[in-house]
Image (cartoon, rainbow, N blue to C red; front, side, top):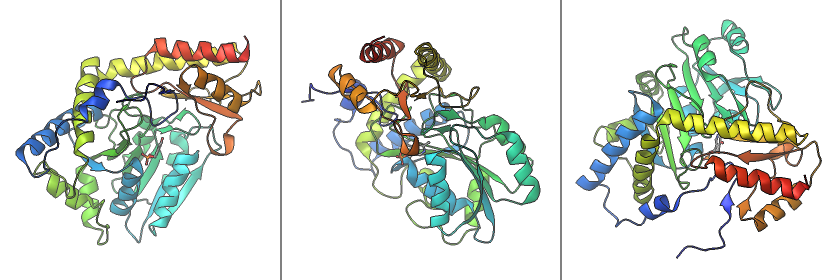
Length: 361
Ligand SMILES: *Cc1c(COP(=O)(O)O)cnc(C)c1O
């Protein structure tokens, strides 16, 4: 039985999961070396390729998205070479830390939190040094900035040795991303953000170039060894025991996503983004992210009215919503409204009018 005191999640991950999707997890268990499992895996593979907009394979693993960060750093950066990390928020910073923690050499292009990275910055850096990879975040969840992935990838592509590795954990399925059209070698994501699934699954599209690189690296670790994952994927399987229940949920959710249409889903997110940013300005607050790069999946509202985010969250909890209070060093100075996943504009309207009531406007 589900708890009827549930607060609907308006935080940027995990996001609210529809009851039908929760229910899909209660299917009878199957063994992962069975035909039923390889059928499930193959179905997921087909749907994942469609939503990633790629002909590349899409790895699936029981892990959070962070696992594929580590996998990317270990499988794509040779020990005697460097990677370039674009850092402008808590998540892009953490990925750079993970590369370092795996003993990789990196350079960083830092921008102030709230700013986007531009293709020019990347082009400049690429003129000075040869990189094995450029690692960057599509949608920086701490600040609500969406980076111009397509334009950045365009300046990297001419460098044949440089892999384009993109974290789209809070972007994919909410913000436009076209893996093959944009020439992205690896796009990684988690289940609990714009996919609107429970946490515990990670997905990553992997180009042939990535696998070629991985073969040149002797110590790739074990759990996130791309060569091993590929060998198993060819048999519609995973090297280790996968989260089968979550895969049942993903099977159902991806069918629903494809019925809605990925592009319609992007449009619904943009509509909710516009509702939120217009609301923030009309209430004399504002948007933390640089204009032109506002995220379709979440808005970090500039708390220029100085509202107490604790009181706000408490008030909204009374309305049945779990709110965010801001992330890391901009907590309180900003708070984030997630408009992500399966949220509908009508729900967002309810949230915004709840906030109005709290502020007495
Ligand atoms: C949430 C998030 C992560 C971390 O994902 P986990 O699934 O928690 O490991 C990485 N990058 C971005 C942009 C995120 O929003």
